[in-house]
Amino acid sequence: MEQVIANGLILGSAYALIALGLTMVFSIMRVVNFAHGQMYMLGGFVTYYVYGQRGCPFWVALLASAASLALVGVLFNRYLFQPVLEHATREENSMLMAVGTALLLENSALTVFGEKQRGVPEVIEGVLNLGDGDIFMPYASLLVCGVSLACIVALLLFVQYTKPGRALRAVAQDKDAATLQGVNVKQVMTLGFSLGAALAGVAGGLLVTLYGVNSGVGTNISTKAFIMIMIGGAGVTAGAIVGGFMLGMAEALGYEFLPSSLTYLLIFVGMIVFLLYKPNGMFGKPWG
Image (cartoon, rainbow, N blue to C red; front, side, top):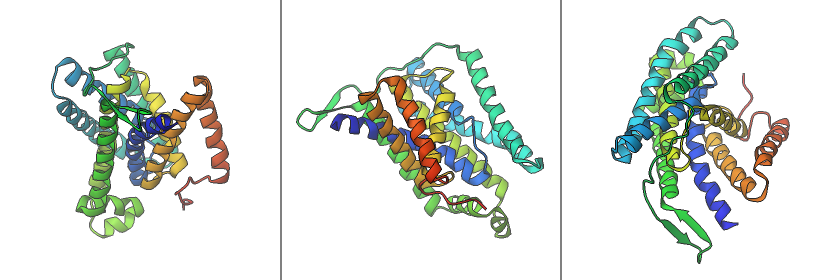
């Protein structure tokens, strides 16, 4: 059981990073970025080519994944989402744009990279043995957990204590009031979208070292990200983190004690029952 809990915590840390990126975009723009999983996928491919194929240091590849996806986020927000948000009269328009970007990225990746599953060499070899031999923690998994937690802490500190971070919080709370205080809302929204995309890229670059990557993984990751933010509360930072760890733990327990085909069936059923009693999630508040 200790091993299952350890696996769940490692997986949950990476999932929390994914959910944070999605919830950041939603809190600032009120847009559900359906392409978040596809951005994760692109981050995995960047690390695959920079680290796995070119032989560059892993840290260089991880930074390349973050920077590449941050640029994708800037371009998508500036030339796709903001024009739609400025002129749309219905929320469905922005949702259709989000779905369209997801399909664009997934089909482009399928054309460029093909269907083949790609993997990379281990970043760190070896296993840490804890608990009198009951818990085995591969160093590669500990690296994923450590970097994920470091990124989460860095983001929380950035949002809490820096001027751009305070601007992000102001826009998330009230765009009109932020504008009256001299905040450039367009620039802040672009910053938020790029940060969310960069977090997805980092998560993809980390998890490719454990699970590999293929051009179709994005939809699965987006689905998991939606589960996490719905459990925790859409647009709530603490909810994204808690939702990520809860999903990671649920997966670890399910794959250990249940047939693999039943794990996500029960997770979805549990989420539906949970939302019947807590429709705004654990930390969410009613809109309006």
